Image 1: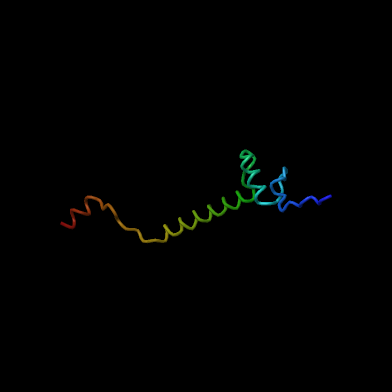
Image 2: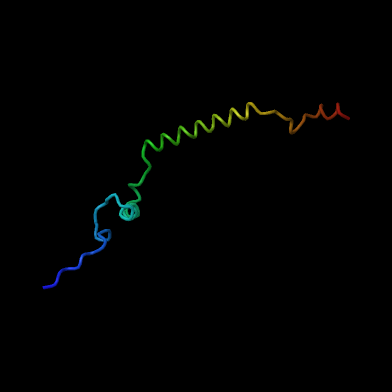
Length: 79
């Protein structure tokens, strides 16, 4: 009687979702409606965007103001 050969990988035989990357990729592909970012991640990104917007506004406020389109009476005074 010969011994049964051991399989090298069980990843192909697994039917439940485990922590393994290959299994997760397959599960994610099969269940696109259940895949969503966590609330913690969403909150973190919202906070980062708020900070980024505040920094941008601060940079704009502190920068020099230049006249791109001078008014008509400014042009007449120069001539």
